[in-house]
Length: 422
Image 1: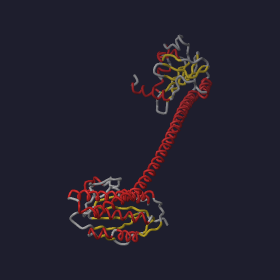
Image 2 (image 1 turned 45 degrees about the vertical axis):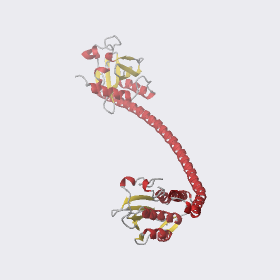
Image 3 (image 1 turned 90 degrees about the horizontal axis):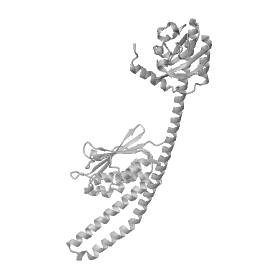
Image 4 (image 1 turned 90 degrees about the vertical axis):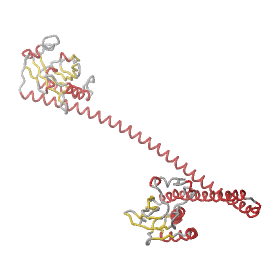
């Protein structure tokens, strides 16, 4: 029965995986073949590997090994069946008597025994072959020892394959480690460069903002004096222009102040102490009293607030920004209501600032903490810096900030702050 093509394809793949063809046999393999010749009591033995087209005599005893066409191989006749072939006189077998190794074209083999070399996956790679030019018999013990030696040969094949795989893996691991180290070095350099750039940018923003405060204040003062002295001489168009300039200066001063706060939030020295948030909220309410009264707003605190590890100045700025935002983005149909509350979490506290204002649409909530991000730029109610400043302050305290909708209408900003280290 002919062997299935896919079975032969798998066998050849298994053979080539060992990478033994056309490579010199090592001393251990040669020693095993010599032992086989002694066990069989014959002068000649061979370790044969059979590929697509040839029989490769990897190592031999008693004669010089060479390659020969597979069609002439005695071992190719039955080795794939996985059974031992034992012929005291090969001339008595119709299959073997006509081969060149028996009929005199290559040799005059009489005694012949071959033991298939079966891989762990069940594929026949070749044979351990012992033969002689005289008729000879083997007892069962000799055949059993030859089978043992065939297993030893396959074990040596496997050890060599595993050693090669381990060496390849070691080289690949070394290469991967080198790549990781190089990428880590590049990443470290990129982070250092980014940090340097950020420091320079923050320093630039702080310096520019600080330097702009005085000339803007001067320009605003001069414009105010111009209005007081010459306002009566202006026509309607002139008054409109002067008022527009004053509003532009006011907005510019607000932007500069916001930039200064942002720069300080990331650049100012951070010296954490145990901070009672009840005191911080009291200070924040005092700071915003005029704004709250002018807007008809109410700011309430639900229960006592905890103490946290933090910088009192930055935390005061944080809550002031959030409440200021809540009042600034009020709903036109109702007075602003802002509520500060707290819930315990496994690792700390969640401070919620809830308002009943315009709210933030869900599609904008992922970007409201980005620098200069605005939900409705046309409204011109802010500069898109306040929430960015809040995020910087929270991150400096080892926490995180998130935004959600108020089911009753408005926005909920949650500050997740760690508990104080005791």
